[in-house]
Image 1: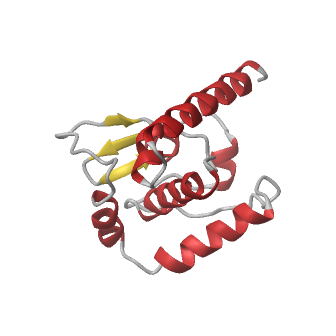
Image 2: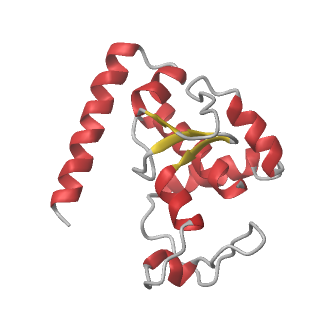
Length: 153
């Protein structure tokens, strides 16, 4: 859970600073706070196929995962690496429960009542101080970039 919370917090901060996320994942409100949906699935949904994730990250055991092989850092810019380091320095010493409590205070989190609720990127942008109109424009642009990436695969 700590990894999921730290990744969400880092993506949220990237959206606040640059209006662009690090992960391009989907966001959802869950009982214990907001999470990156795709990363959540990679962690909790068993997969028999060898994927990039499974080559580097262990399957969960007692609600814990571990790094099995260093994936390197060539996918992040120096600014992104710096942000990850900064967020880990600021929040990495907190327990999973403290991180969960912290993310419950985020304006975009809604209690899903035992399920999950999608969080639109415009909701996160608005929650971090971007005005509603600009948040909608940025969200549409990010959706367009996501569609272009999907088509190029």
